[in-house]
Length: 210
Image (cartoon, rainbow, N blue to C red; front, top):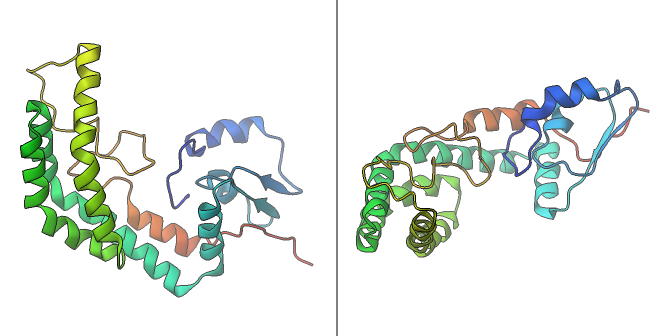
């Protein structure tokens, strides 16, 4: 199982890919590894090489493959913070209400009210992240709400009688487009993500045994 979501991930197409692909017995070369769906579904005895245009992503796989304790602790911290976002359900409700009525002051007030709780959750992910993410949310979210309302008005679907408890669809992670998780439910089970790192050590360049 991939331990991260990535745009254009092939996890949901694995069955179709497996049905169409020839039997894999020699070597797998994956130049667009992304979330690693195909790489991690490949039998361990098949030598594989993987790459991606995103250097940070490749370095993440390298760190996971090395089994570094500090890396795994960092992943567990991010997973805990991700799950902790589920405890902020009331914040999402207040933001949805602010978005519904187009009140920027209510958006800012909700963010300020829940800032300590949000920082407490994000602190679990490691030093420095909480301040950076909190600052970005405070800066970008009000402006994003304005753009969303303009788009809705342009499309003519500004339905005042509709309950919008989920701004911009659902509350997703950066790369999650599945629509499966709502604001009161932790999106993508990060406990499984941590287990994937612990239970499925990946190798960006696996070589056949000598």
